[in-house]
Amino acid sequence: MPVTLTDEQAQQLEREHQVYLRATKLWNDPATSEEAKALWKKGFPEEPIQGHDDKQQLRSEIQKLRDERETEKKQAQEKEQDTDLARRRADIRSKYNLDDDGLKELEDWMTKRGVADHEVAHSYRESQKPKPSEGTADYQRHFWHRERNRPEYKEVVEDPEGYAEKEIFGVVKRMQDQERERR
Image (cartoon, rainbow, N blue to C red):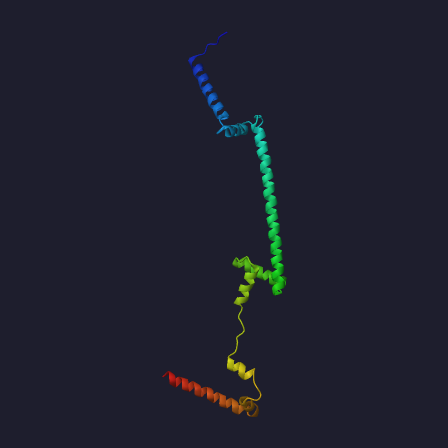
């Protein structure tokens, strides 16, 4: 028996048919199919979608394998870095005879200054320490490299006060001479 529809019912049926055609087009179009199926799955997770569920499961497994590989690679790199750091620490300890406190102090300084290399940090810190002063050549010659047969040595041994007086007057005279030359 034929069904008779009112104009409003016919228009509603036409609208629903247009929605169906558009949804089917989105569902089957390769450019939008995955998104449409993912959206459907989000709204109705219990309903299976042929092909889509299998692809999602396969993608999930592939991603899991990639993540595991990345984790293993990262762990291997970290282990290599730890081994390298331990080797560098042992080298710097033996080379510069550092104890635990010395090494900790050096590494604290490195962290504070942003220096990554132990050798560079140690070299820089050593270069900043004051060096002992080197005396003048006359001072060294006179006091440390004396030769017993030199006349100055004999004078000092025979009359230390007289020698000191002579040297003091000599220095004063040289200073006076220099002062005159400057004027």
